[in-house]
Length: 351
Ligand code: UDP
Ligand code: MG
Image 1 (cartoon, rainbow, N blue to C red):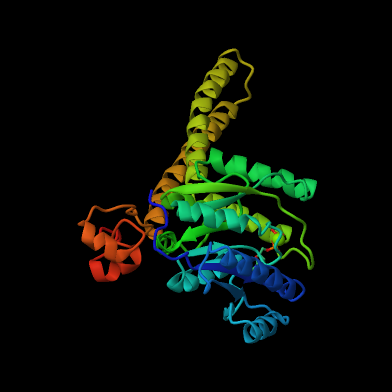
Image 2 (image 1 turned 45 degrees about the vertical axis):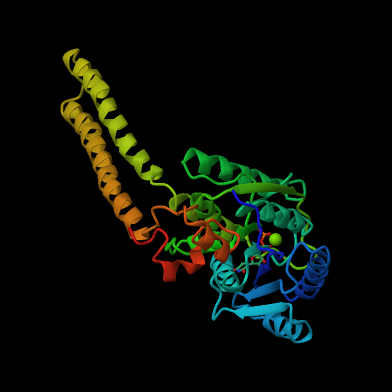
């Protein structure tokens, strides 16, 4: 791990997805601007650091507000999506746009439920050399009991199913430019960023923070969207549900043996009605074979599904190169991935 040593403080972009956020935007912009001004004053971040608001196809005054924010303050930028693409995609659009001219990108929700003071810690970690910094909630006391309970169930289920997610981390995080470049190589349509980001690797750190209530407006994540998001998260990362079907099939086949013994005994001891034995036997045996076959077909679908995602197979963290080249290129051990096109790829070539 190499600390940031570009000679200049890093240029930080804060990406804020916004969907019907007219009530919170002016205040959010004010707070973020104050924070950036302070961090610039401290010399922690570059003076040209900025905020990028992504309007996710809002139908209210969100975009008008972003435009006026930009007019009065050049540090406020905007990106408007053609239609509502959903939180995850809006966020990705923002990250990919912002990384073009930022050294690191921080994502945060428009309602500032996540304590923006943590951004200072994010930047400090980044300057120490961490390329992904996860904001982790200290506790969930501001959530409703229901949301807390369901969220906990979700994290447990995810880890049981073998997907690596950072516990109590939502989409509040810092990513280096290179980490975002790598993220862009995940070509899946069903985006579940929290699940993908840990797959990237690279040195990462966690910063604890307290989560507040929304200071205005309502949650844009009703139960329906939350459930869809959870299902997406699980099915985008695991084929274990399919395995479960196969396992159930095997179990039923095994059970059919026991049933066979039972019905045969019943038949021999003369307790069975004519025809019963064969019916019960075939129900269990054929049922087991069917479920197992479905699971087997599922296995193939699972393989196709994983191939279809075409995820990158690896990312390079470091490369050894002559010293002189290293100095020219700045803070990262070489080559910096954003120079990749010129220098011939950084891991995608083998795909
Ligand atoms: N959001 C978005 N597109 C959507 C839904 C939500 O960009 O379709 C944004 C929203 O503006 C906010 C963030 O995603 O900045 C998180 O939404 P919210 O705060 O309503 O979710 P909660 O905190 O209740 O889970
Ligand atoms: Mg929120």
